[in-house]
Every structure is written in C-alpha cells, then in structure tokens.
Image 1 (cartoon, rainbow, N blue to C red):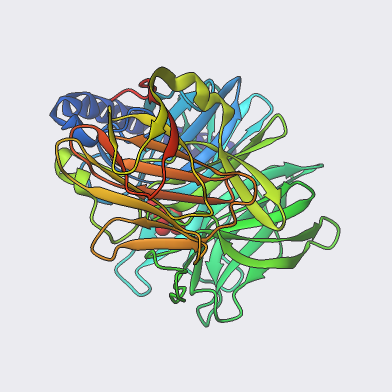
Image 2: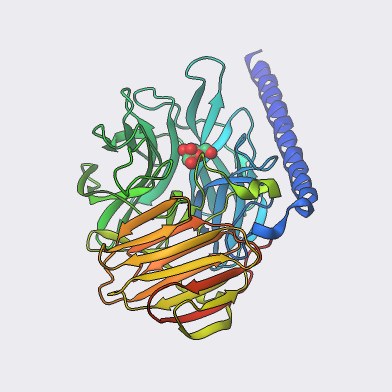
Length: 488
Ligand code: FRU
C-alpha cells in the first residue's frame, strides 16, 4: 500500500504545484496587460530620458544588479498599481552598456510573500535571484522576513524555488532580516543580510553556502555600537582597489551639522577582510557616499574588473511630485567606483559619452549670462575655484529652481533647492577645476572634480532647463544635449 499511497501523494503535490504555477503565469500575463494599458495615461513631463524609471507605478531600491549572458540586468522594487509603495514586485530592465535600457516583463510577483530587495548571480547557465520574502501578519511584530530563491534559464522568465525559504531566521530571531547580497568566492557562495540586534542596533550578517539552498551562519560582519542607527538595510560588500568596502543604508542616524540630513543615509565603511577568519577590520569609519537629497539603497556589480554602482534616485518620506503623473521613483546613472585616499570616488561611466547628441554650447558664460537647454543635457563647467562660483538652474517655463554654489573661503559645495532645503559638504578642488552636471527632466547629478564629491538631487523644472551664471567671474562651459536611451 505504501508505494501506492506515496505515488498518490506525489500526484496530488504535483497537481497543486502545477496549478499554482499556472495561476502565477496567468497573473504575470494579466499584469503585463495592465501595464501596457496604463502607459498611455502617464504624463511625460517629468519622465527621464536616460535614467531607469518604472513604466507605471512606484519604484524603490535597485535589486539584482548583475551581468548575465552578455547583458547587464537591473531589477527594482516595484508596485505597478499605484504611484505609492505597495506589495512589492521585482520590475526588470536590461542593457548592453548600462546606458541604453529596455523594459522587460515583471520578474517577480508577490504570493504569500512580498518580494523585498535582493541580488542576482549567475550559477552555471542559470540566473539565480535571492530576495527577501516579507510576510505580513496580524500579530506582533506584524511581519517576518526570510530569504527566497528564484531561477531563470533565459534572464527573463523566473520561477520561484519550491524549497523556499532557504534562510528561515536571523540568529537572534529578529523579524528584520533582509536584502541579501550574494557573491561567489572560491568554492563558496557568500551572502550578507541587513538586520538589527535585540536592543535595536543595525548590523550585517554573513553566511556561506555551496548551493545557495542551505546556508551556514559565519559571523556578524559589522554592527552599530549605538551611534550608527537602529537598522542597516541593503548591504553590499566588495573589494575595491585592495580594500574591502561595506556599503549599506543605515536607518536612524541623528543629523550632525551638514551630515545625515536625508530621511535615511547611504554610506560605507572601508576595511580589510580575511576569508579564513571572516573578520572585517574597520579602518575608515562610515562616510556618506553621495551628498544629494535623493540617494538610497545603492547596489554594485563588478564586470571585467570594473565596479559599477546604481542607486535609487529618491528618498523615503518626502514628496514625489511625479506621483500625480502615474509613476514615482527612478535610478541614478551608473557610476564607476574607485578608492582614492580612503574615499570612494564616483564617476559617470565612460559609456555616457555615447549619449552626447549635439553641442549645445561651447564657450564662455559671462556674469549674469544665461543659456537655455532641452530637458536632457550634460554641462561641463570650468571655473576659478579660488573665487566663489554660483550657478542658478531653473525651468524654461517655470517649476523648480536650484542653486549650485562653491564658497572658496568656507570650502564647501552647496546644492540649494530653495526654502532652506540645502545639502552641502567640504570639497578640495586640488587641480581639478571642473564640475560635470547631468540634468534630466526631473533630476540633477553634480560630479565635482574627479568625483570625490557627488550630489544626486531630484529637481522638477518645467519645459527644459536654463542656466544662469551668478558668479562674479566668467565660466567656461561645454554642454551637450543627450539622446533618449530609456523608453519613455
Ligand atoms: C530599502 C527597503 C529594503 C526593503 C525594501 C522594501 O529602501 O526598505 O530594506 O527590502 O526597501 O521595498
């Protein structure tokens, strides 16, 4: 009897499983249909021309930033049905060069679990996603987080692993246990996860596995000693120019002067790491990686020896003026990272040059002189940074204004969105007297010098940009209109 019973049980499980797979496939097709029908309702005024944004609805963190079968892949936290945060899906784009992006079908839909942030790796021929299953309950603490896998053979269609969850609990049982970042080293897979201690100090946990299905807890890679926030989200850990970098997004840092003025921060600790003892020795304390208003949950990937970073170009708990237009949130441009003098340097990837369309202006901008641009433009500025520099950027037809300032006496660069909405930081121009500014329909990215100070801030001008030189000096300017590289 036992073999027959086992066989019937097998048939039952297979039938239930294949029914749920069919339901999942139908739900995916319905969602793609919904998105297609919704796209024409989107108001394009603030839609980016060359940054990744959701086709409709809400986007937050970058997920699964990776390279698979000749293409870059970027997934993102996605709620298609409204331009506010909701049950999380994984949206998906791919690119041959990190500049030209194509929307792909939604990769993950929530079932009993919402699909929170995570990462992607290639294992043989397969692409493997590891993400946090966030399950809401009606009892305290009202949610629980465990780690899930999903697989794909083509980089487009994903199926969830039937043995999920593969990492069912944090060592201290904390319900905050999320955002796995997986990588390969030697014969093992490693993963780090964001979590917290029982007395609410942010920490990062390190695990190891040979198959990504069963994991061994190794150590607490790093944790707050009490002054570094109550939760560390979206950790990333990588080698850069001979050092190890722990990049993460701590919640709960107390503002100190110019620092930590955003709702939450994104920054890094530099140190050394030993794969025998799993000890991360911290050498340079936490520093913010970008000094603008809208930068969070950055993720990196390494391809051909180059380390690239993309970040959510938005922030929690701030207005998102594009939400009335049917979408919210976008990504920064991809940046290449280097470590110079104990600091991460971010520079726009070289491939950004292919977006240059026509020269908008090359020449001198005199005091109080203005110049007008389309919505997508790259502006390179050379000035005498021994004197003050002040540039006003505004919409050709109104909307937001923003001021970029350099005060040589104070030694700070300032991005001022008006009404005291200021971000500023010390900068040493050294020998590089240039600013590189990327403007899109609703964003500003300012790269100072070699990229030692970078600001990413959302700004909402109407009808293209106008730049006015308010400095008491002529400024050398070279600007290019940029091609569209993202389907609007
Ligand atoms: C960071 C974050 C992650 C989480 C995701 C949910 O912005 O809170 O920790 O996985 O967003 O959307």
